[in-house]
Length: 451
View 1 (tube, rainbow, N blue to C red):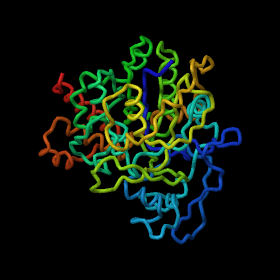
View 2 (cartoon, one colour):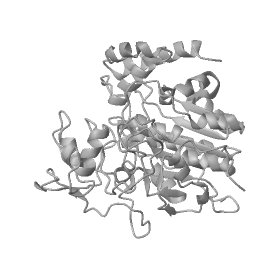
View 3 (cartoon, helix red, strand yellow):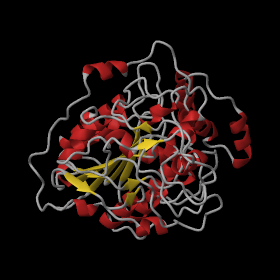
View 4 (cartoon, rainbow, N blue to C red):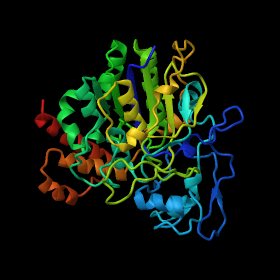
């Protein structure tokens, strides 16, 4: 028996050590934390009192304000200075230093707080029931958009930021379509993948609201061969964000992962489905493993050479064809996902040199017959953090990602000459206001998008 469906759920802004590093034990020897890892406030001295990792990261409210994770911030987090010092003073030494530069931060050491073993029961259960990849890196040392582009295109087109542009890169979905492979993107409020110009032609035919379609398709055995799930990025009154982006916390993301897994587990297609749960980038949170060298995807190196990965992120791979308690230390990045799709679906070619060089995931499915002992349901976070995830009494301001998504929604369908007008528009004052405006722009785009 072999895999015939791939489902990918990509969440936001969490490092490997931050979420799962403290799961390390003699019985579960992942490349995690032993509790002695630390950063100095002045990493190049080094001087000051070092800050060690701790297992007490908050659920909700989350680390507020959230850490920065743009390209210069990641350079500071990894090397302790921008540009990186020569000779190097070590790697992964500047997380506390970088967070101390964020406005209104009073406790920069809090960026070293991680989740203790057992505090994230959904992620922890899946990691031990199936496979956890402890050598999976974000695709470049930067933020959300370029790293999400790598999962869709195996390149960011040479860009390292979230600026509003008409991104022209060829996508995995074009290769799937050319081969006649069915696919779908399930989204909650707004699909960030529409930043890619080549995706907009598919919006009316290949995009569906997660809440209306995903569980239904699982129940009916109608999952496409490739599915990508985008989380809810905005808090909007009773609809709470589940993307795990600070300051949204991790509880609702845990609940989303559980819902996706249980829908797949109950599906007629379960025995031939491969689920990948990962995070786009580390979000500025601490991880202790230095990023290794990487294959540049193409010749678009105007801002960065793309010869190294970004910070390590969690990745959990789920299938009844995977042995229980599998720890996989193979080197992966986000382009392992399109590379796996290329292999499993016999696509006509790779997208770039990066996915052509990437290790693929089908080798994890080593069992000849599907397991019959996989859990039908998963434990949920305790009542206390679940209650903390409820709507706050006062509407919250938007975060950086929400501002970028709002700007993207405003430019859908606009010619390039009008993009500067979009950039000049003021961001919304609250998440609720931004979410309402985003929905309105998306509805207007849907009315005019290609059928």
